[in-house]
Length: 150
Image (cartoon, rainbow, N blue to C red; front, side, top):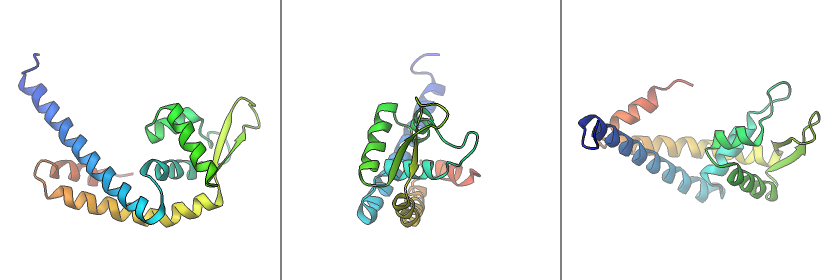
């Protein structure tokens, strides 16, 4: 295969379309969350991921798992956790069985903010997908996103 191979060119075009779709969705949700809740997409995602933790085996995520879930480096995730902790939305504590481990839990204020922001996130996502579906290059990707079952 060469750089001018039609298969590679099509692959690159598909990736470019996916990148555009992601960027448009991310920007639309970011604006909505910032305007209504003073919350970034990354902050919302972190609260969402951490709110699904539970007690028991495998219930709490290590920072590397959190970083993977919110698609950030471990250092960027730590800075994000610190910002939300400073706002009273998260709390950190030592793992009771391994003093080297640090867990992060969403505070009640964080859960309340997440609950208030979830409809904003969902509405903004729907709006961004509806707008993108009008673009013939993005419409198939929108259909793919809509067909994914959780």
